[in-house]
Length: 541
Image 1 (cartoon, one colour):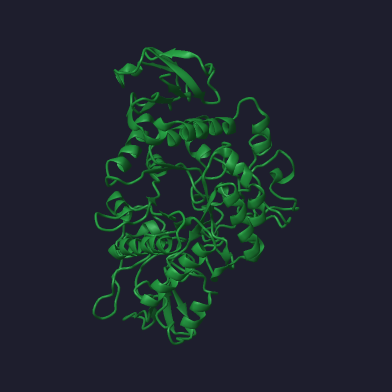
Image 2 (cartoon, one colour):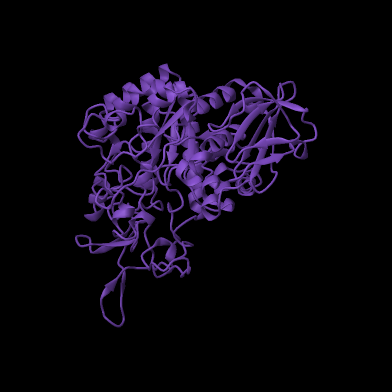
């Protein structure tokens, strides 16, 4: 929400809408970066980790947001961006000048001299996420610096203890301001492999995954991602949070980790028998599995199995449908399936994560090359930018069917609106008898009121390629059954194939928007008919 008419969302805008979050039934909100930034990568290039970006507001505005959130019993989680800073950060400017204490704050290298041409070249063939070389020559320092993201985002050197301590200071500073925890951005590239005895780094190998030589996928990332030191750093950050609580009291803070790493690496973030790590390494399986293959009952089961079968005992699962880096859930899964997927993440055990707009069924905006602002898209060209740009999932939130969808009074918003804002918005869906928003609220109410969904045992199965079913049960409480037809044709299923202990009839509690069944009615567990895309939440009472 934009409070001051400049077309950009801001802190006071969020504060004015916190009641909406409370009404939704969510308990915490994670903000993308709000720190001082030249905005090359929309706040992920930070020039001052200890202050607020002026277009978002002031420290007073932030404190007002925290105060209001606490009154509503909502927790505010900040985006911690540890891998890099902006090249406009004072630390980087001092490092360029080799000022005492900052000489090795970043990853610097002389590069190599090409034996044939005699010209200086980057130290390795490593590629950045946003296409092209991960090394940039700095004329003043006469060295290359590493940037795994944009040229303006130099990588911090975590092999320098001063950097490690500085970033812990950042965590403590914002804990002092009353935040409830951090989502840690882009953890896989935090460390690179150590150089050899001659100070040289190894080249990555060709993957054969893409024909675009500038794409990060063109090479392996064995030396620039998922290093063991990264796991230990997360354990150190958890210790900072735990120490803070021990000293200052209050509730514990939460640590969430962004990683698209394989399970063998991701699960280590949780900690081990002797040390605690992140409370929640983000689980993107419901995104990544369906990127490789279509939405189906079998693939949903595969995505869930991949997490629950690998998660260490005693830890908490979490479920994510979308985020600001991926196309919107309703566009990826199909608009007819957004209710089913929202039901799924509310029924599964652990924490569920909603990217703003998923509760409405918001879809991708159509963004032209001229309107593209995401560096990933801008670093490509008009013919291929749609393969890379993340702008379609970042269009302004849709509050009303009025001008700028009620997001801003500006003549122009920072990105164009998605085309469906006149029907897919908070006001229209709130007033409608049936809507994605009403279904989402019914799900959070059920989840927040029912011990079965909070503490119950979960059983799940793909009954057919298209049909997925899940049961949550707790002794002394009604069992909850979720069933979804993710296919394009109607089907009849026998739920007793899934669970012989189910009663002959179940009570319908919540239905997807296109379902014609009546809530509160009884339905037989044998011979249950499901229309294409229909999803139901039923109870044994």
